[in-house]
Image 1: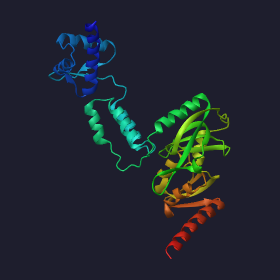
Image 2 (image 1 turned 45 degrees about the vertical axis):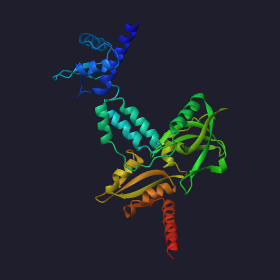
Image 3 (image 1 turned 90 degrees about the horizontal axis):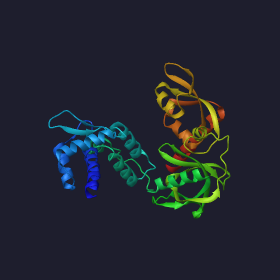
Image 4 (image 1 turned 135 degrees about the vertical axis):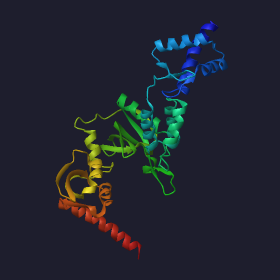
Length: 330
């Protein structure tokens, strides 16, 4: 029986060293495999290793010789190639809603899916210096709870926190419980939100997941999702997750702003006219400070043409800021 168990473990050990130490460019020699097996008390006889590698290949593990001397064995059967892993690590490290500790844990797990050599290369090549991160380490558990609630068709309850000038957080509404029927999880502008029916306000609302605390499923059936609800349209109209009246408008931009306009409104944006210096885009957005601040960053390179009500609203916001700055400098 011990021999059978040892034989099973030996196949695992061979796979283990191949996955840890080899990739498409670098492999492990027969001597390295023998040493690895010997340390673990497994048979390291040359012919038996050849036989084990043959068995693993028949099982579809894709072990090959790389053609150099001394002969090295490599495993090509991996779920992700290095380019795909870099994309996943990039996304995790750049996501604001994932805390620093969770980022490190997830990155280490992804690195374990490639060879140790390539994992070290990934560590050197990927860097997000000073990237703001949430301090909430429970985001993954919160999203799992929300997913479970959506699958079971029940409401969730939680406390919602805001930051204080001290950079600590405080529960909103004196720690009152928020109760929501969750419909979807939305990733927008580097933040993760739950979209659902908020019973206190009797309307569909967004909540930042990294600001949610003590999230629990309830046994209360969720309010049915309205058949007319188009989540993609709602996200676009909310424009940065802030409420406001949706408005169609014509805006003139200098030609060098075509990329940020397409990035913000999409490649289906209707371009009304253009010349050597400007183009006019017909866009629809929720009128909010977020939208106006997006316009303001471009200074005199942008001009709202119509409707007049939006032009006046933008002017009023700018005049209000100027008034505040003037008062502060007295």
